Length: 190
Image 1 (cartoon, rainbow, N blue to C red):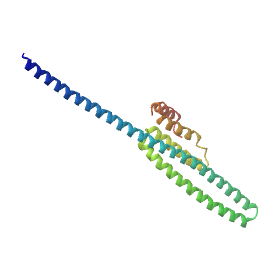
Image 2 (image 1 turned 90 degrees about the horizontal axis):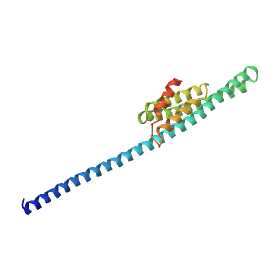
Image 3 (image 1 turned 120 degrees about the vertical axis):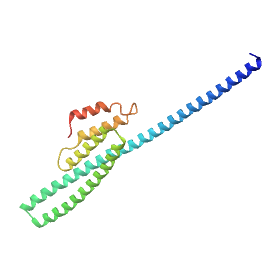
């Protein structure tokens, strides 16, 4: 081999190494950009999910308050009707009529809150694992039962809060949900 050929081969080797280095650098840069984009997207999705969860929990609280108010109005109407049977019918009938109007308005507001809850549940069904959608549906059903005179939806609300916390757990979102799902399945549907 002549010195000229050695320098040509060395130049070619350096050129190939330079091209390989540029390709590797571009590939690593692209991967880093994809990782940043993926991370940003996942953070945005997580933030949106948190907002939806807060809205659902807030709607659940407002729904309980409204349901309690409707239940109290229904009791007042029953008491007024009982008084009408034994006492001043005209004044009591007017009071019953006014309370029934308030009760209609109360239930209308409750239905509006349940529509908000349903909208949030629809979003959860898309964004979250199926167990959270199921727990959300159970909470909504329990809230309706409560409004109709049933027990307070305490367990369903606690399950909903726990499922949501597990899903957005910063130490590993969703990692503990399978165990939670088994617990919910073992307890059975309300």
